[in-house]
Image (tube, rainbow, N blue to C red; front, side, top):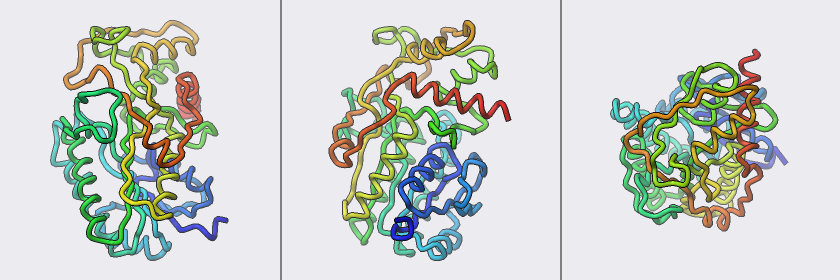
Length: 331
């Protein structure tokens, strides 16, 4: 089976979500090659036997050579910068690393004969939503340069697909969490910005306390509610999106979440239930720009791709992340 499937180039494949996608592709029988500059990715997250090209996706000769050498006709694009507050402080970095780098990558893909392109986008493109759950038809009004940089890439893909033999899928992530159930990958970056990973660091003693930013929202327990999706389910969605494109599907834009919300307090209550002793959980002031609710309308991804999540359970998500964190700290 493996030698009959097209080779897939994964940019950012040494990162958190990208490495899980590499595993999902390999599990499905696809040959894979990774390009990653290792600025936030880790060589150890790339499976043995997968070629790793250390470089920048904006390096067009490098990308074109990779596509040609490995015969890649599909691309999954994860490379880029992802920290919202940093994008506010340094917007040009985000328009460079995300928008301009993506433009150069897309140009290389067109020249290299790539016909299927799966793009890692974000629910941040919606800004503060007017309705929840959020459908793909909701207005896109990002409130950070990060969100804008991702939306601009979505627009480029739309326009290029209208002008060339080029099919794309945009996957808009909600809150990604957890780790590979088989322990092959997980979050390993030096900076922790995700609630579940932060909670796991608290359980393992890597940090002393955790703060809840805002306890007076108009939600059942006063804390923000988010749609958490296990990273392995998200990786599977990427494989399904790729296969839809390879089978002729055009211009697919889908939300990636479970369609129900979990509050910050509920996540930390789950963390406490898995800890050996009491956790130091502190209340803090709201952060600017945090919406009370961010929940995906997931009807489209389920119908268009036949996607059936396997890990839609908060305890499963937190336990998998905790197992990965403990294994990392034991090394």
